[in-house]
Image 1 (cartoon, rainbow, N blue to C red):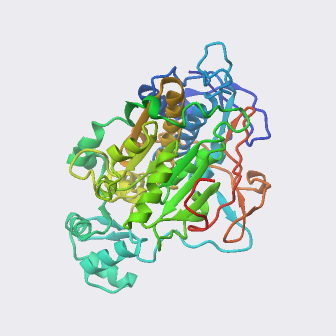
Image 2 (image 1 turned 90 degrees about the horizontal axis):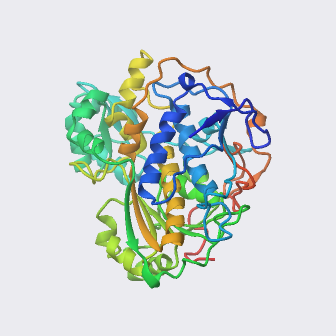
Image 3 (image 1 turned 180 degrees about the horizontal axis):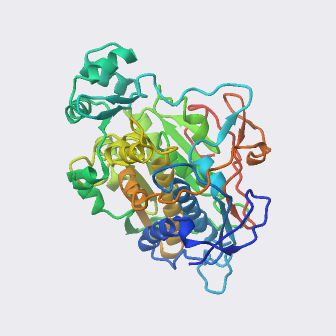
Length: 495
């Protein structure tokens, strides 16, 4: 693999390639691990390519190489799309005599996209966090309460026995031991994470279980003659995923990031949410390019509709807890029965084995559990937990899932295989912490109008401009055909 670096940024600038200084970035090291995870599962030629260049300058301040991590994750997904080629002869870029398109990733723009990509024009977006959510000092350390969902908020307040007032919560939390409060909130159906050090997490039973897992779990199935979607699709350079149907059953950030990426290259993405669910702080960020509908999966007609959607899908991405779909009669065996050629991509928070494998979790909680917030606090010589500059574990996992899904498409088309892929936030977090920032790069310069796309996106909430896309694939523009629209604005059917 040869990676080069250029001096410009943005899709309109052609990079002047120079050798990438190994001692100035960890992009190459992260990229090797991500590509290995994708290539080891996909029985295809390696994605390692001489056509990748990097551009942009600066880094977000962090105890870990956050900007390098973001750049590598976006590069991995972009290389997977580039490897599809045009598919004109059914080779999906696998023929040795086919030159693959050049890929560039702008590290500056990647940094912004690992925070938030949209800039509201003349209106105010909803806050990302519930007023009670946050880090609290306990009698022996720190804990984070995640209360964005009403039922998670109610569980935490019930355990603490206080009303929904931050001062009251602060006082109540201060009387608890961190581990005890974490256990009680989780047992009551809430979400909490005591802050641990990197060493404590490495020695924790769940940390040990995560360390033994691969970055991505792969499993393949012979799709046989029952596959109806195989053969109907051929990528072309302008919109390589045009005609691919993606059923998005995920929420918050990691899964929606994966499906948003796929939509940017032409996939038809249909997101399904339950009635009454909303994420006002994150939905405008992640529903770009998607149609969003609602179903009640507790009702027979809702499940029947979902089964019909699964039959005609190419890819399904879901982040339910391991037993949730099984309890609805839509477990892994049933999904495979409905669609033998399905590419089934799933996400778990704390890993797929170990005592916490079914625990509810989010990026901000993983940062506390896995030692990231503690390491940030120590590096900054701060008095309280210091998280990553953005929800980087979520975003990186999303791009890894997208890369794996694209590679699985090539496997299905060339080998007649259905594929199951599993990722976890905890395992992605473990990759992040394999490197530490020892000599910080110059910080990112302040954002300017040149960093933004000129397009005005007319969303359900008001006009939006996005940060320019960080990835460029020669001959393959990144374009989201649909603006971000509110949940429930579409019907649950394929167009």
